[in-house]
Length: 352
Image 1: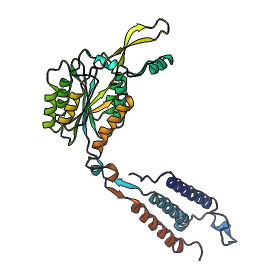
Image 2: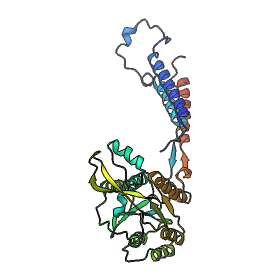
Image 3: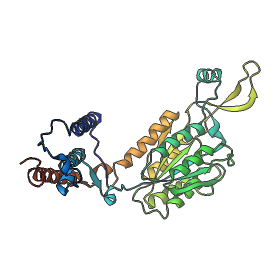
Image 4: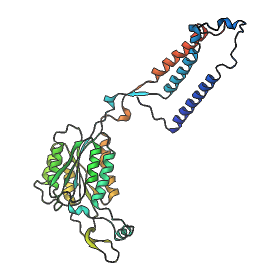
């Protein structure tokens, strides 16, 4: 059983009405003996041992019926609903994220001024890997119906977890991941796409997506990324490549420490990227290519990809079939009121 979202003011009004009803009930109960008319009986000692009859025992029944009716009316006023589970289920998307764990993902994309400011604050600048993990964590936390799988790749492509709805396990694995878990001396984009397609081979989801996150060009693959893109297109799988990193020079951490500031030294490096390959993969699979220069851009691009498919779901939870239940409470409340009036004026009438 669910309740409609009326907003804070409507719920405040209902709470006020409930409080007033409780106060009136309490007042009536405390005042039940006050100013009650009666008849004087001069020989009360003769009835001292007489047990009360059934009418005397039920003298408070009309009051209980009235309070029960009031409680049911308050519940009916809140409009309880029953949502049919089979129509509330939303079609999920099967998503495989292929994440680059090559050594270049340790690169930071910040200006010299920003680097100095961060280091003077006693912190390390976030690298591409850290930004990608942060965005992936937010992405998984926002999922509700979608199965997600993670493939990581460097010199080899490895499966971190298969398609699953167990978001807690995913977040735990992401939290323990770090650069260096696999050999990052190469960037096998073709192998990563092949493994991603293999994860989706047995999927019966209407929408199947691969999100490829990399900061470099393909090197060391056993299969061509272009051929894998054609295979994805034949299976109706869209690939969305995201090229992370600045277009200009970036900085990679070294093992050296500045003798004056005691800060880690970062060396300037050129970004060896191949955006044309990623654009070709996106065009072949009818996906879309993104260029993310920082964490904010990466998060925005993820959101753009998901927004495209959120609109295509078969059934939206907000539009799921609901059965109004207020009548189940209102009708019994009216019945209790009628019964209370009937008993008060007939069998349980207190005065002739």
